[in-house]
Amino acid sequence: MRNAALITVLVALAGCGVETATTAATSAAIKQQEVDQGKKTMEQAKQKVEQAAQQVQSRAEQTGAAADK
Image (cartoon, rainbow, N blue to C red; front, side, top):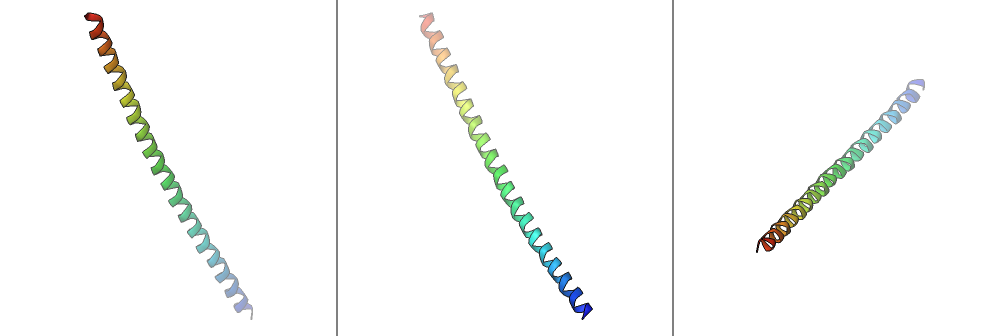
């Protein structure tokens, strides 16, 4: 009887370990998605900044050309 109780407790604890591991894996996957999304957002922001810098450069060149005339 005592062995059966011990086995039941061990099985219950093992089940908790599996659930904890599953939760940790799910949490890690979610964090990875957040990191990937952050990288994507950062790349989009970088592209927008580069486009804005090109526009400023073009306008400066146009203004300089108009002033030379």
